[in-house]
Length: 403
Image 1 (cartoon, rainbow, N blue to C red):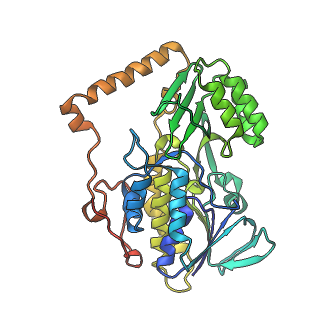
Image 2: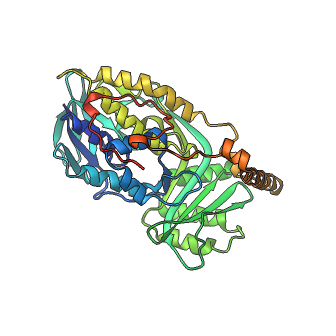
Image 3: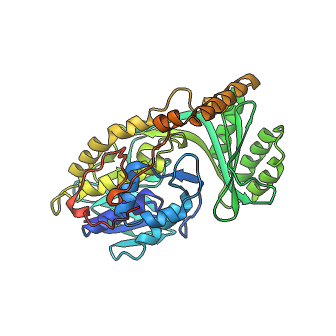
């Protein structure tokens, strides 16, 4: 089997690793000229840790984690992407091609999928995997526009890596400004500071301004809007942070949206990760969904007979995984609004709520009953499976890490 994967983020290399285990020849094309090590903090949860362990990477993952109140396995997205890349780049079955994109899906038939690459060459494969993010060019080229449901959560996020100074806290600091704005700063393990802005524009005019800036992909337009929106925030580090953001190499400006597809595949092309089911950062599950989905897809592909169309594997994968994805995407109605108070009195209520919760968790009985449980790793496996995790004989090779 020959597989082409578009995107060298999280889902693509994970899928490639497991496809290689049963002899699949994998090509990964990536628009960036080198491996991108950008991105902010992400969590790896539950079953995804089992999969990381099955790849033999749990120990290295633990070395790269950062302190977090939300997960013992929180890591910078760029560090996880690099970890997966380093684990797969010397695999003889996997060929990385950086600075390369798919410019056209020439054929997607019963017999093959044929693509034209940015070097003007055409190549044929047995399947094509779109693992190229929530605004996937491959999905756009293969699926009709009305087949993609984009659910805008009314929130916008901006982040960048900025220089860290002695004045910066060693903690995750959150400043809640009125008019539904929040400024986050958080030190990383690379000696820099992660600067993160989220906002829910309270008026139609402001929403239009944020929409236009997000679609523009123009740094000056985006920075002008950010400066104007944050100008009145009484938080001393803001001017310096904005100066650093303007010079950052990894400025990210985006609407917070979910992606939903009625069907994840079309003939020999299938969407994976955010391209198929972006859940939004508010779930804390985007990375785990990408890892879980990659493992499951590889497992079902491993059960195909030689020369068999991948349709059966695609259908089994979607049938097994989609209910779990839909559960994750079912975000409560008050998210993200609850953490973005518009008025002084709603901010006061939110802070009182957080203070009350902090008081409760200090009570030993309540903390033991309702607080996070210590994770156990019998034979390297996490004890709180939260996603489908069938065992496939072709993927059985495992390097076990015990704690």
